[in-house]
Structure formats: C-alpha cells, structure tokens
Amino acid sequence: MAVPVTVDADEFTIDELAARTGMTVRTVRFYATEGLLPAPQRRGRVAYYNARHRMRLDLIRTLQDHGYTLAAVERVLARIPADAEPAEYAVHAAVLAPWLPDQTEEFDLAAIERRVGRRLTEEQIGYLVQVGALESIDDTSFRASPAALGHAIELLKLPVPTSVLHDSARIIDEHATAVANGLTEVFVDAVWGPYQRGEIDHEQVVAMLARLRPLAVQGLVSAFGRAADRAARRGLVQDE
Image 1 (tube, rainbow, N blue to C red):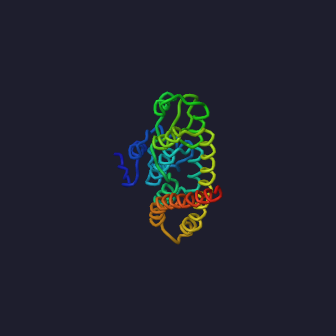
Image 2 (image 1 turned 60 degrees about the vertical axis):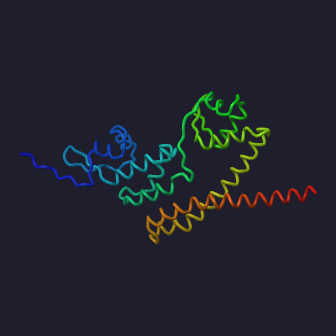
Image 3 (image 1 turned 180 degrees about the vertical axis):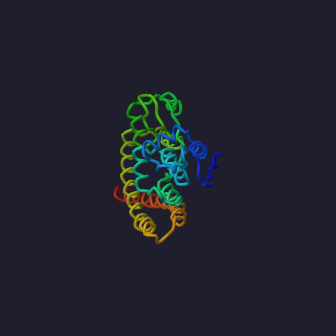
C-alpha cells in the first residue's frame, strides 16, 4: 500500500506553478534550464516548487513585460539570493518598474503614416526613433507606446525643420539622463542603502517609491517651466 505524500499549501507541482504564474510548463522549464530558478524539492519522482519560485517567475515576467532582455533579467536575479523572502522580490519589482508605464503596440510604416497624415522621410522616422516614440523591429515594423507616438507625431506637425526637432530631442535627452542619474544616486544613498542595511523594511521602500515617482515627475515639469520662463526673459532682454 502506497504511503500518501503530504504537500505543503505553499508547494506546487510544475503544472500548478505554471497555472499560478500564467505561464506554460514549457516556459517554466526553459527558465529552470537557463538557471533562473533554484532547484525544486524532489520527493520521489515528483518535483515541488514553493513561493520563492513563484515570486521569481512573477518578477521574470514583470521584467520582460517592461522590455528587459533575458540577459538583463539574469543580471537582476543574480543579485537576489535563492532563499530570499517574497518581500525581496516585491521590492525589486517596485524599483525596476517603469516610471511612466504604458502599453506598447506594433505598427507597420503604413499605419504610422496614416496617423501622421503624410509620407515620412527617413529623417522623420529617425527622429521618432531618437525620441523613443518608435522602436525598430525590422525595416518596416516598429513597436511603440501610443501615447509617446501621439506626442511625437504632434511635434512633427509643427512648421519647423526636422533638424530642429532632432536637436531639441538631443538636449532634452542629455539633461533628462543627468536628472535621472542624480535622482538614482539620491535614492541609492537615502533609500536603497538603508534598506540593504536593514534600517527600513520592504513596505517602506515600496511606499516611498509609489510617492516618489509622481512627485519627481511633477517637480521636474514645474522646474522646467520656471527655467524656460527665465531663459525666455534672458533671451528677450539680450535682443533689445
């Protein structure tokens, strides 16, 4: 007579794990083969997975939904111990989530030109790629955020040379990168460091991020408006 195996409520077979994470069994096995999952607990011929496996898969899916390559996902997971608590995964997901999340869609060149209302030159397509409104898939297909694409298309409709838009996009990107790097340094010093040292817990980190992101964006917009006003006044005074 076979002895029944007792399974913990937080343990899953590979089929149950796949169902709970919305993945196929084949995908779960692929991630395991790539070394992105710790080994399961085996009882006889059956492998059992736990909450840490589930959280790890949830984080993998979140990162890939946000555009992370498999190599980038691997680098993120390498920083998380295999025996980390589920809260650790929640913190990483919160830290690495996009500041301005938006769904992306695929467009062919004809669909983009219909939205613009005219044929696009290579320079104009290059501008849309430069500002991040389009991501090239191949020569005629692109991935884009509808919101970002709509904003960039409105700029294309302005009666200014495309070269002016290129220069403007370059300046914005350079200074936005500097701001982002500065904010990241502040976050690392003021939040991430104390979290790593156990001075604040995961709930505080997630809560701070939830408030920090919209406040930082609002602050950046306000600061830019004030700076633009000052620059305009200086320009007018110099021309007089």
